Picture 1 (tube, rainbow, N blue to C red):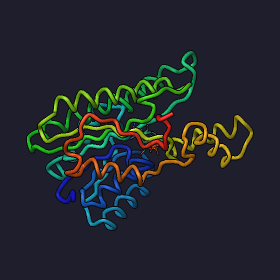
Picture 2 (cartoon, protein in one colour):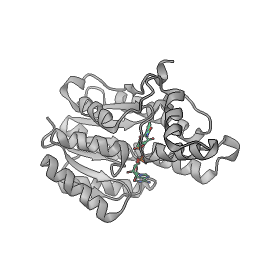
Picture 3 (cartoon, rainbow, N blue to C red):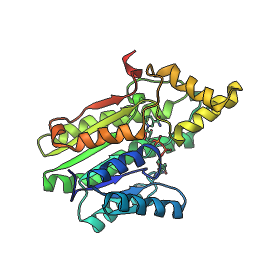
Length: 260
Ligand code: NAD
């Protein structure tokens, strides 16, 4: 379905980004992986996806808090594959603290990686997408783009911003063959969330498994984590012909969180 298409998936060395990268490779897309991690482990991951799905895969280690490195990431993809057809803006970090105690450098980092990077990446890929008359920008926002939660000021502000940016890009590209949509996951069990589970276990003096159950049970009526594979399936749908008329949407996959 996506053979001869090239996708950049930011933050794809782990968690949701990796699930989406694998799903896109599964339908034939060549990939530019991005994200941090052990160099050998990333190389093993790169090779294993290329071999399993018979696609070309490269990795670029751009730090998405730095606009110049985002430009290099897109330039590298264009140099390797001649084009970027799909951009999945996924990389993200979290910091949890009340507003009065929120460190300024953590605020700046969350806004830079979770929001500004979405702008910079989109800014660089849109001209080529417009020229070819086809493109997909998929922004991994969150239920926190729709509702708030205590102690997540920067994250909630960034994710609301991502949904606003998604709408503007959708309007500016309407009718061009390019679509821009946001995916809003609820709890997904990834390293980003494992840190919050570990902190809950420590603060409440309970086991990690019980903390995981409490965390997901408190907000998510399904009481089940959403999975990176399920989100990968949704990203593939957004790249399909069936989703051609869909742009500017913020689609939840949250086990019912935002229906309450
Ligand atoms: P994760 O920690 O498992 O993965 C984050 C990825 O981003 C990693 O590959 C990491 O190396 C990369 N990354 C972090 N900082 C980076 C930087 N400065 N430059 C480049 N790459 C960087 O996290 P995840 O849970 O898979 O989260 C992925 C996205 O999904 C984030 O935007 C997050 O906000 C969003 N999200 C997660 C959940 C959840 O429950 N896990 C829910 C809703 C939304």
